[in-house]
Every structure is written in structure tokens, then in C-alpha cells.
Amino acid sequence: MTKEQLRIRIGENIMKQRVARKISRVALGKKMKVSAGTVGLMERGSRGATFLSLYKLADIFEVPIDAFFYDDSGNTNDESLSRKRKSLANLITGLPEKHLDYMIQMAKGLREFE
Image 1 (cartoon, rainbow, N blue to C red):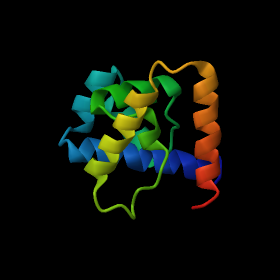
Image 2 (image 1 turned 45 degrees about the horizontal axis):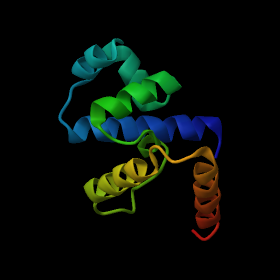
Image 3 (image 1 turned 60 degrees about the horizontal axis):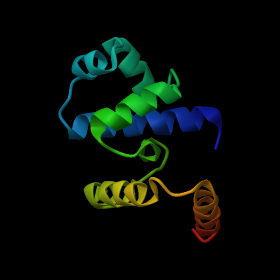
């Protein structure tokens, strides 16, 4: 995946989250302390979202930050997937670094089977 494709995917996922919550670009921009135009640029993938922006968005939408990186178009129940991701994030919170490293290796191994 190219950087441009990733920016577009992230932007599409930002828009999906915003639209699902019936939040306007203006309202989201105010919550993020950016302009509605900046929100639009991020949603179109014209401007890449910074890590800080993604962190703010994850907090506003109450989703794990990785929710913006994946294409869930084949999933028929996005709300269920979001709950599962949040549950997983809660389970690994506070684990020692060696356990997190192990979890990362497990996730990488699972990706190979997709």
C-alpha cells in the first residue's frame, strides 16, 4: 500500500466515523480545534492526518486509534468490530512490555493467514 492509498483509507474511515455519529465537519473541527476545511482535507486524503489528530479523533469517536487504518468494508457489523477492538485494547492495557511484544508478534502472524 502506498502512502497516498493509506492517507485515502484513513480519510475514508474518519468520514465513516463522523457520518455514523451525525457530526458535521464544522462540529468535528471545533472539537479538534482545526477548521472544517482541514477536516475535509483529511477525509479526502489530500492532507495526511497527524498522529495527534488521529489520537484526538479516536478519543472523540471512542474508538481505538487503529480503527482508522483498516478497510472494514467486508464487515457487516462495524459496531461489533469496534467493540471487539476496544475490548482487546482494554485487555492489553497495563501489560508489561514483553507481553506487548509477544502480542505484536502474534498479530503479525495472524496477518499472514488473511
